[in-house]
Image (cartoon, rainbow, N blue to C red; front, side):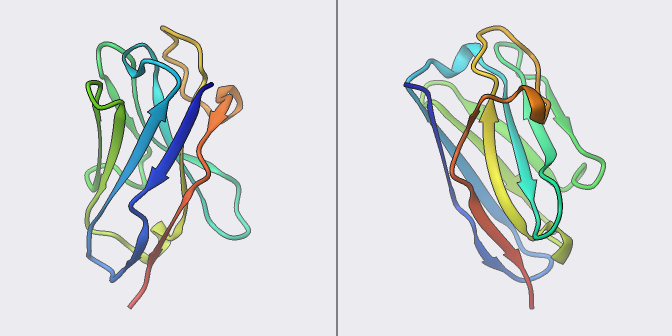
Length: 125
């Protein structure tokens, strides 16, 4: 059974940092592309970052490029999102997700079949 579980969210001041973790179970992470998405109150869920299976190519939305870094540890079945220079507009519930299709590099919201429960990130002074 494919499961994803996020952790690491919290309250941080503007300019601060957080590292989110996504624990995968029920499948071998190596073969799957994993994405981070976020949803702010009253807004649609949007893509933040992706890391592809096997070759580990990374993608970032323009709003987080240069501030966020996605990484994976296949041995631990974990994906991380290091978030630096946080801004109030980064406040949202953050989700990790996968299409669940081995070898696929798809990382768009409509193709993601498996989602974690989300972790709240609040950036406020």
